[in-house]
Image (tube, rainbow over all chains, first blue to last red; front, side, top):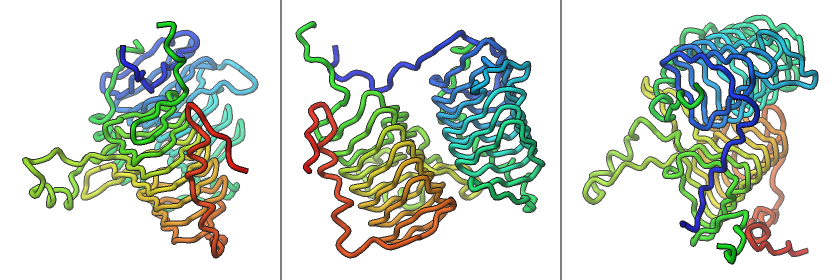
Length: 192
Length: 204
């Protein structure tokens, strides 16, 4: 018996194993955590980093094409109310959920091409438009509707993104996913 | 079996690193610890995000290496007497470089303190740097020596913080200067002794 034990602790797989529907081209790390009782759907070429949490207790989770969900983020966090809705969280295509961000469940929608910054929080029922940027530590209140191309800063300031770099950003995301697919050992069968 | 001493919370290596068993180190082969570094529980280091495009400098030097040594894939390099507090996260920054996406190594000097809940995606951090709690250091930020970053700061991507600055705010701004003779406050040797499997009380 070796003296040094694994430093990676076992992942607490609390709760039931959710029914999943994965595209064959996704990359999902072995140590991602999927819990809940409602279905989790992940569309083609999306990447789920190690230790990301997808919780479908508060409703179905849909992740679009070419999304990147970074480590330690929570998609579908059950908020204080614990309401169950049919569509818990819907992420569009090309969405990036950065480290330690949290998206509450309850008909929450994140539009295509939106970036949820490090440690940002999106409340339940919020509808974030397409190609928005939430900077680190931003808080979006529950039920808030945010128009397309909005940039929200953590001090509450907002502005419109008029750069028109959607195509470039999408291309960059595709390149990033190409690299991540080679780096993150994918194990979708573990969740099926 | 039962006579074995209870396993400590930390693994202490020969070079004096103290790594908590509950820390999550991904891609350990790409993480370099300089020695005497403390990694507290719930810390996450993403060593798996290594450089995927060979750098021009490493190809030039590889001809001198004996027998074609394996390429240097270090993703996270940490110096001596660094202190990574509970719940912080280190990940190498990534960007498009010559048309291809690649991650770049994250380099840290000596005596770097990183507060709890902080996320660091800097390109390089100098020596004697103090980063507070819940700070976000954006991608490719460069932090020079003797810098103090206050709590809840958001350092934007690509920012360069000069030596002896005190930085705060969202987004980060230089709000002051480290006072003359304030260098001793950055020493982490005493803090290093206060954690581990048989910690010593901090000197008062």
